[in-house]
Image (tube, rainbow, N blue to C red; front, side, top):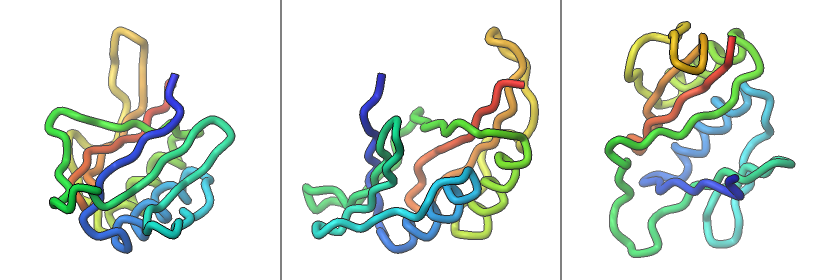
Length: 125
């Protein structure tokens, strides 16, 4: 359904360190910076990118927005969470763990990135 997701970042270098660490915990390689200073994480199924806003205004986090990354295992999700906290992220929501939902049991871990964007990992268990 999605071709790409791009988030605004106030500090590209801090955001790149954060996402290199967290996405690295999920098995992805480091982001690539293009000539315009944007960071791209390219996979076979889509693209995740970071950019300072082109209007020159500060990046802001979307209130009520969450971007979820698929996790291959509980261990990878926990490593993602720990890497995020160690690289400028902050805890939000409940601690990592299993939640029951209408879709069955899911393992979730939540963070806010250095620019305040809410992200999570999800694993159906």
